Image (cartoon, rainbow, N blue to C red; front, side, top):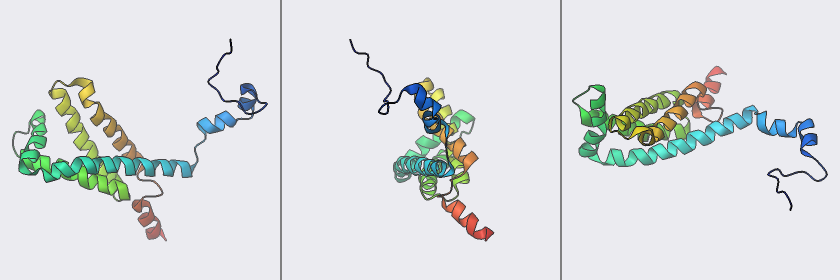
Length: 167
């Protein structure tokens, strides 16, 4: 009986010799600046696109939708102005998503989106949806924390503007 191995070996090589040549180590552990910036670009554009898609129906939904979304603030003890808070959440999602896509004001946009995701997490837990209901908001919150820490990267307008202002 032939054993199927999960590794693909190079012609005439064995796994130990690959490790000795540091090929596997470089593939797993080496991260250069270009790869980091490309990764930030991909994360920004994809998460930004998803939030634009989530924000459009909330913006277009009008007062009724804004009031429903804003009612999440009730779980924080705020018992009025639901339409206002819902409208702010819709704008944060739509405009924040656009800003992430183009890489402009990445940290402030991520902060507003993070705050929106914190409220969404509280809402899901308050509705007894548990972790499964809140996990999407928590995952997005983690992405926004990362973007607040790293910024938009080299391929963001923020960086381009900052570079030009330093010259």
